[in-house]
Image (cartoon, rainbow, N blue to C red; front, top):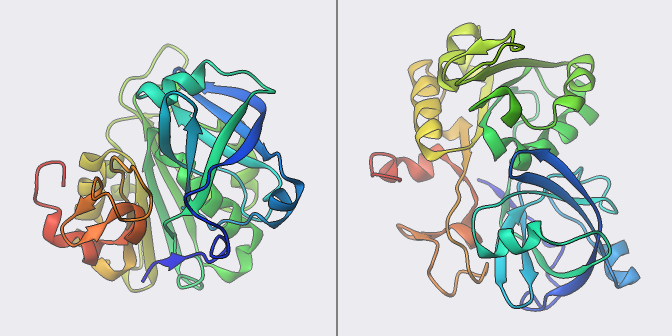
Length: 285
């Protein structure tokens, strides 16, 4: 089972709350992290989210876009969204500046099962901007390092310039996170691995009975990550993936993000592999 938060249960989920863009940090080409603060001090103080949840960011005149929260859940006053330009809304967001106001609805959706997987070895496998919705998990696990077994991050991107949050890696490693990083195409300065992310599983010595896999990224990548995990006898119940769909209402009413009987915005975005197995053979799921 995946976890849902009740932190917004007393709020009207249809109302977008004004929030100020405090800072914009360029991350990689076409990707930036936006730090937001609600204009209402009471809402700012009450706001909570769980790792893996998302907000709907509203740009007047352009619409809304579902964006995963990429900051530390235990520092809710520092609300970060790492956004790749991929449409009208995110394009409009890329043209904003610190001090401007946008609307925020949320948080919405299921969360990564950080409580259920205590005492597990954890493999986080993500590609490109897929690291952003998993960064809150990394923060959570490292804060409670003694509650989990071996922790490994498998991360891949198209090129070294597309790797996110590299300035945090040394800290993560020092806190006990093992990392394997690969890129599709290296450059003259790249000394790391080149190849597809699922191939990194061959470098791991896994104990399948106590290993949990969390994955997010391009669907074709997640499909091969799941295959590698299943080949190593990791149960489908211990494999979790975060799905992306064109989410419009975030409430499961409009049907835009329906996948089989599930609505990604309401029932996901985090699902178990067991839940998604009937759709894994479909093109683009």
